[in-house]
Amino acid sequence: MRSDRSLNPATEMLLALVRNALWGEPLAADTFSRATDPQWAQVVRLASRGGVTALAFEGVLQLPEALRPPRNLLLGWGVNAQRLAERYRRQEATVGKLAAQLSERGIRTLVLKGLGTSLYYPRPHLRECGDIDVWLFGQWEEGNRFACENGWELDERSEKHTTFVFENILVENHRTLLDEALYTMDRRLDRTLEAMLQQTPCRETVLEGCSVYFPPADFDALFLIRHAAMHFTSGISLRHLADWACFLRAQGDRIDRSAFLRCLKEERLERFAGALTACACLWLGLPQTYAPMPIAPHRKDARRMFPVLLSEKKTCQSSQPLAVLGFKTRRFVSEQWRYRMVYGRFSFPYRVLLSVKSHWKRPDTIFSTTYPPKKK
Image 1 (cartoon, helix red, strand yellow):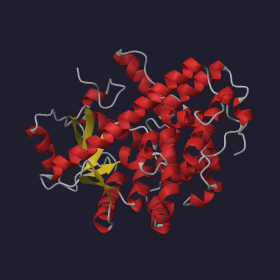
Image 2 (cartoon, rainbow, N blue to C red; image 1 turned 120 degrees about the vertical axis):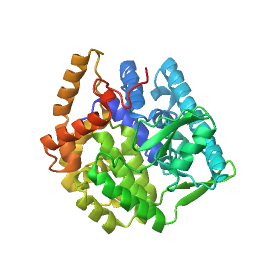
Image 3 (tube, rainbow, N blue to C red; image 1 turned 90 degrees about the vertical axis):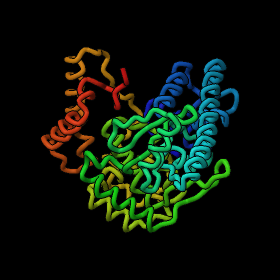
Image 4 (cartoon, rainbow, N blue to C red; image 1 turned 30 degrees about the vertical axis):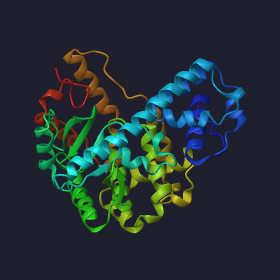
């Protein structure tokens, strides 16, 4: 892949490492031959911020010794990558144990995002995972009772899901697949996604001796785009782009493209989906043959989107209420273009109403810069 002169050296190095880990793209010596220690340190920071620490480290291991980063940095990077891989394997086992216990109650477990998305990667354990997201095929309340009967604290603050801790890992038990309490679009998409799960067989694997289910391709095509779009308006990372690229590479030929594109157009998500796909092709090296739409019309949007995928999420440095309100107001205004890209003609007054609605339901979020707010 040709060098992109618009990128700084650290970003170019990181992307080369990620492409190597994903697709086996050869690492060009001239990309790394002049790398300085500060540039390598920046690569590590970018990888951590982007949720691709283990992926990038896998690429580093393919470099000749002479082109690798300083030993102390390499060792620290390797320790973090190993820790993430171990967490992945622990989470994989935990999902199996949870599914086995739920199965005893006659409940099937569908895994969303994280672990399910990792299966699209050439090496699944290199995909960083956080929480475990499950949908219990309409038996959400039974899942809650299961948690309460086991004495686990159930957090019911979100209308979309409840959470509890199982085997020291946070589990989100989804009542709905998307945030339909806030967005009309999500109410429509939720119905579409549930219909897909009823009409199309889920992928099935066995973990810890129990069947665990993962969504079919048409489901994940819509779900991953909508999930990434939500993060784009609040905090997106390079990992979301890698998820989309790996999904298209692994499952793109199984998508009903005409139905997918029609749904994107109906929900006005085609601009965002086109820009994200263009980013995957232009910077992660996804062959354009896997793209569900032509990327040429979306290059301009992609060039505006891509820096956001690499940037650090802005946070308020003060806990004073007025400072928090000022920070959130400035962020609200400056990020309006992102909402336009996701929602099309998304009026500013309507976005204000959505924000008021959200804070009215959750007044504890008004002076909080984290969601959900930390318990006191």
